[in-house]
Image (cartoon, rainbow, N blue to C red; front, side, top):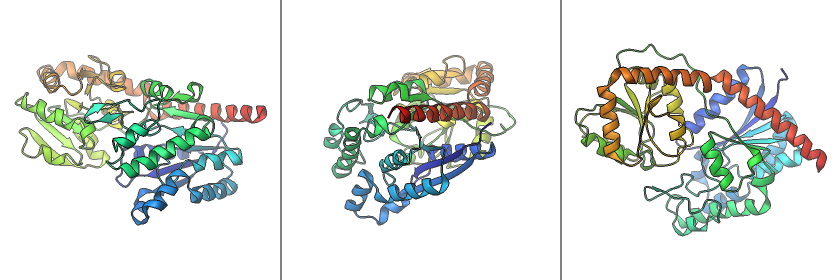
Length: 391
């Protein structure tokens, strides 16, 4: 096998999330297989000390990132650059630095930022695709990014500028979508179909020994898009259901005093997996197009079936009646019925858990993911060389 020099680029978030975990997992995976990996990382912790004008300039075109990338490419000589997040500090200037140096770029699309200002396709608690494949200026009028017209204008300006320059069309050799549903949305939004490939997330850990399973589990950020309101209403319709909640967020207070809820707070990964090993089902009541919740893969690895909203990619990842149960998104009655059925049929849920584990072994292991990633890198390098010859 030819070992590669890979430069990983990521703009980290102020509040650590699943995307940051995915980046770290892929870096570890590549290094464990002998590849030479360097990183170019910036953090949104630096945003606090910047003026609004300086941040806007960085978002549109970061001269610092351009210089840093040019120097890093010159010193490291990467075979490929793998980008995860550029917003807001790294900016799309890095793509042009890579192009100038003749290095192919692979970009993982963890959310819908290139198509939607809030990256969620969600407005007022409902799916919104008004900007999909169109100008993002409706999002400016509605202040879709952090409720700010000014911030929304900067983001819309960045998208419009780089669409006009052909950055997203021409400067990224391959995009990685996390599933077929998301791939279809990115193509509908204007990305070249031939450049968008699919590779899911993965997890790599020894599953805890399964103990007696009971109750329901929620893992994740406690925020609107995660369907916390639906979850709370469903508990009122399903007396006797016990729910453990691992996570924190702006809607955490809504769970205070709700009968049957045990708030665990934010837990480290090994503690989350311990909870998964003794739970009857993981509940994922999201009301937005989840790209690929890593918690579902973790649940499958632990032999834990999932009760999820029938929305977007979730309806493909969780096979109804086989690896879990699906319910109508935003419908607390349907969710309550599914949780009640699960508790009344523990043996059926155990069988679904076995199939979920099999699904993990077939699709979401580190070994399978590594093979997929290497194939994408090889394809990107080959395509970039072909384009260079034609150019």
